Image 1 (cartoon, rainbow, N blue to C red):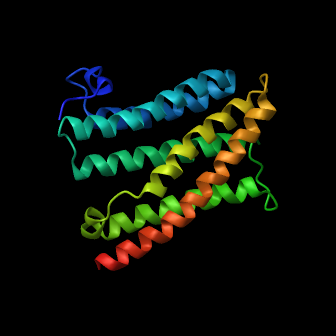
Image 2 (cartoon, rainbow, N blue to C red):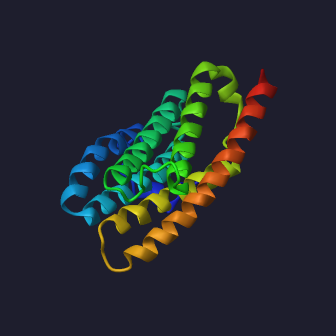
Image 3 (cartoon, rainbow, N blue to C red):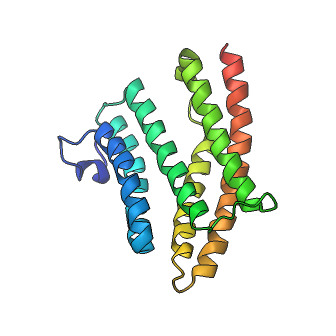
Amino acid sequence: MPESLVVRSIPEGVTPNMLSWGRIVVVPMIWVSYLFNPLIALFLYVLACYTDWVDGKLARERGMSTASGKRLDEVADKFLVVSVFLVLFVDEVILFDLQSRMFWASVTIITRDLILSAMRSYWEERAAKVPSLFLAKLKTFSLMPSLGFLLYSGGGYAYAEMAYKVGEVLLVVALACAVISLFQYIYLFYKEG
């Protein structure tokens, strides 16, 4: 299969694992830059999200896919998402309020990801047989932009209120996909056992 234009633009020496480690390394930069300029934090976050998409394409198209690489990719994704949620909680973009649906959506998504990570670690052989689900990909596809819009809204820039609303809607979509795909994964893991 010929390489896509995206993969051809990545230098030969760059591996998917390098991109995953890059996502982990950029997290402290997102935290620090958010204190001074949320737009820089947003730029770094978007760059990290892009590497998440590229590392999977790179692994598949260059035949570099490994079990340890998949695990590193998963850890990098979780680290990025949880870290951005923490920034949003600290800056009170998402209130730590038991009455807030944004709070519960965030906690549910984080808990779902931790449950799945635990299942994949505990049942490694089953995990290898269970494919990525469409709804899980849709969860990521809606969660990543949601967090980006919420980061932007925390800066108080023009259209911040609208960005918050868009982030909120996308977070609800991510929540629905997260919950449904969790039950699908539980069923598939059970079926493989």
